[in-house]
Length: 441
Image (cartoon, rainbow, N blue to C red):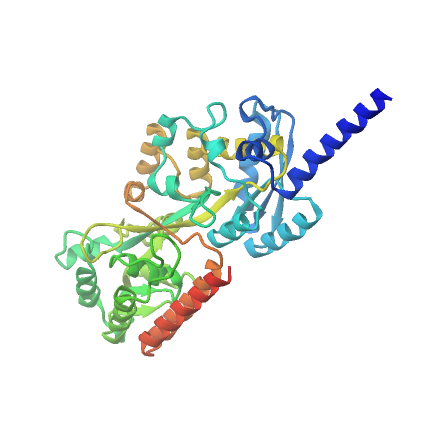
C-alpha cells in the first residue's frame, strides 16, 4: 500500500510540473529559465534533428551553408529546411504550427514579424545562449561584431534579444567618379546641398540625362530622412516620429529635385542601373547587394569609372541605414533550442562569415579574416568603401509589430509626394496610420 501511495504521489508531482510548464507560470524566475533553457552548461545537443523555415528568396545560399553545417558540425546535429514563399506566409504557418504543438526550430523573420513572434511567445530570448560560457561568444568575439550586428534583434517590446542577424544590407551612394572629375569635383557629395548642386550641374532633361534616378519606395525616404538627422521612430520605439520637420524636408527635397529637372523617377525595376551604365545618370542610391551588378555593367561599358560612398547628410557626418532579416528560435525543447542556437553560432564564425559573404554578397556581421578581406578588395576596390560603412553608427529598421504595413504606407506617401501632391497632409496621414498599427499590436 505504501508503495502504491508513493507511485501516486510521484505521478501527481510529475503532472504538476508538466502543468506548470504548459501554463508558462512556474513558481520562480529560476524555475522558468530552467524549464525553457534546461541546465544549459550541461545540456547535450548531440544527434538532434532540427528544422529551419525560411523565405524562398534565401534558399540557394542558405541550403548550401546548411549542407556544410550538416557535414562538419561535431555534435552530429542534422538540419533540414522548409521553404515559404515569403515571411508573411512563413509566420502564418508558425501560428498554425503553434496551435498544433509543432513549431519549427529556427525561422528567418523580418523586423515586424520578429516583434510579433516575440510578443506572441513564439520566440525565445537569446541572451542566455549569447552569454553562455560553453555555447556563447566570448567577450573578445563579441567585440569583433560590427555595431549594427550588436544592435539588431534587440527588441524594446518585449524587452530582450530575440533576433540575430541572418542577412543584412546597407544603403550607399553609387556615383560616376569620372563624370564628377570632369565637372571639377574631387569628392562625392558629403551634404545634401552638394548633392543637389552636382545633380543639377549635369542634368539635361530634354536629352534624358539626370543627376539622380530613384525608385519610389520606403528606402528612398528613409535615407533622406536619416541623412537629415531624423528617424522613423523615437528611441524607445513607442511612437513613429517621422512627421516632423526632417520628414517634410526629405519629401520636399525630392519634389524640388524633380521640379528642377535634376532627378527622375525609376520607371521600372533596375532601370536606374541601366541608365547609370549608359552614362545618363550621375547618382543612384543603392545597397551593397548591387555592387556585383555595377561591377558587371562597368566592365561591359569598357572602363566606366565608378565608386561608392556613404549617403549625403546635412552635417557631413556619414550615416547609413542597415536593413535585413533575422534568425529566431521558437520555444521547443531545451535540446532542440540549443541545437538551433549552434547553427546560428556556426554561421557567425569567422570562416563561415567569409563564405557567406562570398556566396551571397550580404554584409558580414563580424570582422572578416584579413586575407579574405584583402582578396575581396583586390577583386572589387569599391568593397573597401562598403566595409567602411560597417563602423558607422547603426540605424536599423524599427523592430516593432506591424512595421511591414507601415513600410507600405511610407511607399505610397513617397509616390504621392513625387506625383506633385502637397506632401504635408500625406506625411501626417502616414504617421497617423503607422501609429495606429503600432497601437493595435
